[in-house]
Image (cartoon, rainbow, N blue to C red; front, side, top):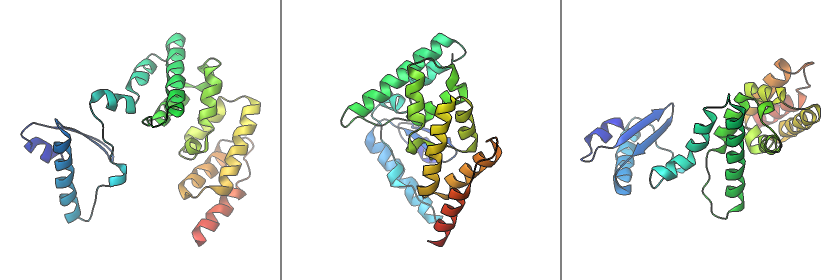
Length: 212
């Protein structure tokens, strides 16, 4: 892909991190041509581009919104309590607006949540802290958290929140369909919880999934 970008009459920009790749081109047609050529080359070595994960952005502003660059810029000063609170307010406002607006474009709010967890949920003032904890507790987010993040979340919860957190994890342990999550849940419950929590729900679920 990088070679193809260099060959374009109007030079394109190619960025890659792990298996995430970004193309910046002058026109939509140029991007489509690059994807087509790269797809042909990958097919020859038994690989392919997952079309379902290709996302299109019209301009830098739309791209920046998707990756929440403005909120991340505010979080660069997270050691400043005022800056952290302003970033938390911006995050909550943006996510509420997205969810209340029909047809609004999704953005990487889960990446912001991870950053806030790393900073420490306990450092965020109410009412934003409570709203952010609510988003953290959503099934879609918890199910992509590894054992390290689950442990970080638990550390900053009140006793009542921690009980609710474990109830949600127990329910996911009964119903979730991805092996990876269950291994992360078992690791969290056995290594981070004092005393260790019962892992039988996830163990049973793993046995069920293995038998499918």
